[in-house]
Amino acid sequence: MNSAKLDRHTLFLINIFSSDLFSNKRVKYLMQKISAEKDVIIIGAGASGLMCSITAGKRGRSVLILEHNEKPGKKIRASGGGRSNFTNINIQAENYISNNRNFCKSALSRFTPHDFMRMLDTHDIRYYEKENGQMFCEKSSFEILKMLQDECVKAGIDNLFKCRISKINQEEGLFDVSTSAGDFKSGSLVIATGGISYPALGATDIGYRIAKQFGIRVVPTKPCLVPLVFSGENRKVFSDLSGVSINATVSCKKISFTGNILFTHNGLSGPAILQIASYWNKGDDILINLLPDIDAYELFISKRDSKTEMKNLLAEYLPKRFASEWSEIYIHSKPLYQYNDKEFRSIADKLHNWIVTPEATEGYDKAEVTSGGIDTDELSSKTMESKKVKGLYFIGEVVDVTGQLGGYNLQWAWSSGYAAGQYV
Ligand SMILES: Cc1cc2nc3c(=O)[nH]c(=O)nc-3n(C[C@H](O)[C@H](O)[C@H](O)COP(=O)(O)OP(=O)(O)OC[C@H]3O[C@@H](n4cnc5c(N)ncnc54)[C@H](O)[C@@H]3O)c2cc1C
Image 1 (tube, protein in one colour):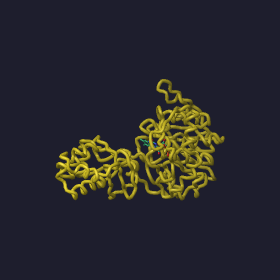
Image 2: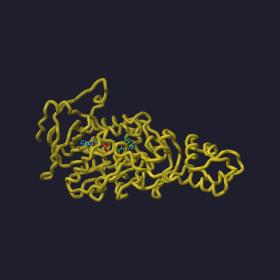
Image 3: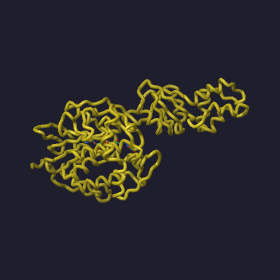
Image 4: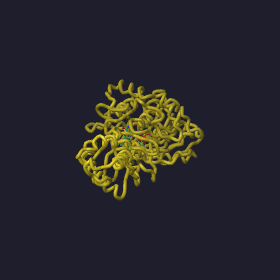
């Protein structure tokens, strides 16, 4: 086997996974010559790439991960607000958006949320269910990253950070990957480069470009799990209410989510809005039920003789600032005994079916995930290998499989990484 030609600078950047590497006190760079020919090259040291490398390494495959960031797993670290919502125990294919909803089933069934939690148990990482099956680390997402790094060390994985990919060719059954750290060859090439959301954490479109280079179809992408932006009068009102949150049901095109909505300077955010944003397209209305747990009309009828003002009654069920501002814009607030039945019905309807029309989303900069990506028709759902290009695999978010909020995206990364790792 040949060895890549490595200059001093490149050697300095080469390291193997070591927990010491990330300690601020003692940074240990282990320099070693990485063989230029591997069984498997994985581009991207994120959730799916790390899982794939561990699985393949345990099978005795020689693996090299190429990563352009200075360290692995930046999105894992940022996930779940630093506690990582690493999976969801109620996982179903219905929790994913894809042109082929069934595609994810095979991988998800072969590496399940419980398999991942067993891995955490082996590493004494404690976790808990927050709500609706969403599993979080008790301490920090860093524990998951460290676990993956430790497993990589055990599996003998090599990796290069700050490594730029310049060219990829396939000749005589081998992939030839030219990088800023030298040229490397492998029989299997795994693209684990994620989506294009959150470029601040290292996201790029390289995965889609590689697919196109090999004639593999890419479904158009869209920012998902992203705050919504409003313009005009709505924006002014929402901005005035910035910081207020309400438990509501939001709907778009017959899809609904119940949870918190949060008013921001630009529009709306919060879990229920992030969820619905994945289904929203420009021009669509969003319907907000501000009182999902009560029947507003019945409430008004039960108080029809009261001298209480409408906005004060609403303030018993909604944040005071919101009740006051909303009443000022949409209704003429007066004592309840002064309303007639038609007016009660109209106000109740507005509370249960408040229609707002977003102008846009906050875009890829603020989107937790990217929908679209490598067309699932191009891949084997069992191995994640391209049907057209033997030895070329796509895993994780770069594939047209996008989870809802709640741990589904990381589980897809673990499961698809594991699936490919078994076959590379
Ligand atoms: C702020 C934030 C919070 C999130 N929280 C959660 C959560 O709690 N639960 C959940 O399920 N999901 C969450 N997600 C989504 C989840 O993190 C991703 O879906 C998941 O990490 C995707 O895994 P991946 O391996 O496909 O991609 P990534 O984890 O993004 O890894 C891709 C890797 O490829 C590298 N790369 C990209 N371009 C190149 C290139 N040109 N050359 C070399 N390397 C490259 C990147 O630097 C990165 O290391 C969150 C996302 C964000 C942004």
